[in-house]
Length: 269
Image 1 (cartoon, rainbow, N blue to C red):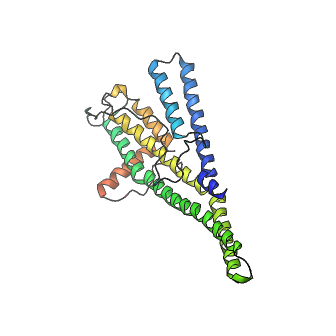
Image 2 (cartoon, rainbow, N blue to C red; image 1 turned 30 degrees about the horizontal axis):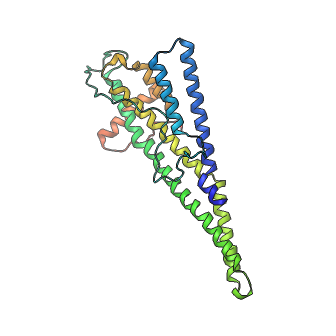
């Protein structure tokens, strides 16, 4: 039973399905909004189907043979969005920060690139580092609990006058350690902590990829409006537009000075 619990990681399963429920509800709202606006096009229907399939693949139902690996080699950010098409190199020319088209300027593009750099160097790196620490701890605890329990059971089997007090001592010590390890692992919900880090790393990867994909589009008219896109990124990171611009300036200054930036992109996590 203990080995099964450690293999399944109930707290991690709960966190997985909680996030899946939230993302499915979010996608449901997007689809309902699309239907309320009018008749969706074939491309919009295809896009919605790809999102559903990607989300289902990222968070499969547990205990059905497709359960997510609970002890991977290292943390891989959760990916619940479809793979984007091959991106084109942005060859659009700009001039002195003036608006070329659709709300985009050279200054805004530079700002978005600096935001991506901060996400890569600070937020993503930090969550992956913490997630890998939680993963290593969970692996040790998951292996130690059943091992100590087995030692305690073995010690109790050899208890008797012929073996002296050592068997009883071994059984008592191993049993106490097993109880402490199992309580810390499942009571502390280490698996849930790892899953939280994995999902947060996935969120930052999504923001990063959405910015890079938008900037890769050479036709400015095909991009999302620049001012609205800037506001959306700011809201995703829990900042105002002015705070996002200040962050980009700090990142650019740090890059020129060759010093690390001391601020994270997100103020939400």
